[in-house]
Image (cartoon, rainbow, N blue to C red; front, side, top):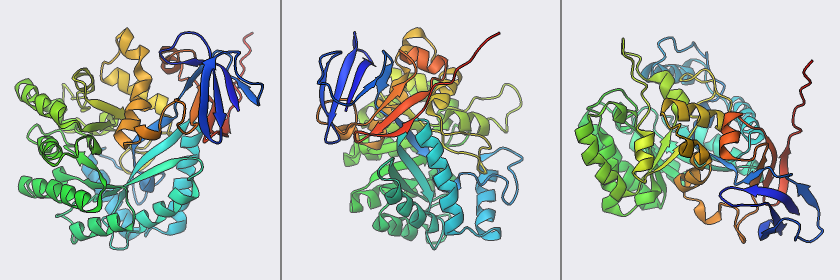
Length: 411
């Protein structure tokens, strides 16, 4: 297969991208490739696939059961999910149907890599077992990483630490945590330490829900970064949300950013969801409640975006369209300088791959797996301005999704 007349990011001219045995075999000037089966990109942008770096597949399409989140807060969402598990018991068939529906949406929007948190505050670990099955079922279309996520706490929930360890033994890829939900700061720090301990024991990545609260005193991020530096895990660690940073004073942030740069940790940010959830106890002015994305990027930290939720107790909307998440995030984070927008696709492609720790097999380079998208745009700017469609999604050299552009006739 050859993708001909492709526009590549940060490269002049048009290119032919040759694929052989599921890998990129050559990248040459347009018109110089052999006469194989060709897909003509017609000057459109060809990029690596979108990366969804933070979502909860096990929660998707459960909004309104047993009731809707009327306060719009994180903590009511957690309570509703807890009620859902007891009052409307989850089943394998119910969860698989919702997850498949979600993945089909994501694939249609060009997502090929997904990191999903899965609730392990469940003695049966049903969600994890279901997602381990789904991971195998969809392996030829989307790569799924699973985070063992103690939604109701490691120490606030009975046997939380033991369930986390069991989840890692069963095959979860990452150890998670939620220190701001623990009963005390001391328990929160202890939970972070336990997450690191188990991740090292089982050679797993780490992704912690960190400071997802409008409380400037919630400062577990410094604990995560310090442990990442101390253990040498550095870029194998992700801090998700970190929305309390929105409320930190600037003097503290100046000190904190020095540690963050040294630590090398990743940041997974969910702009639509956290704009929806945060600032709920404010009158006016209301805080946006999204972490300092612009400042983190300017400091050289790795930041990627995620949808977080699709129609669940925390967020009633969501589609799985990463361009929508990106466009929303650029606005709310005021990351809208021309140069910012001109390179914005990094946040949902290359940066996401760094978060998932998959850069060794990600990107349009000779020898790497032939995973790519053809976008109905010619630049990052145009793609995000028009939320441009993905016309082709190719994984391991095979087309897994094709879209015919819509036609509009004006009279």
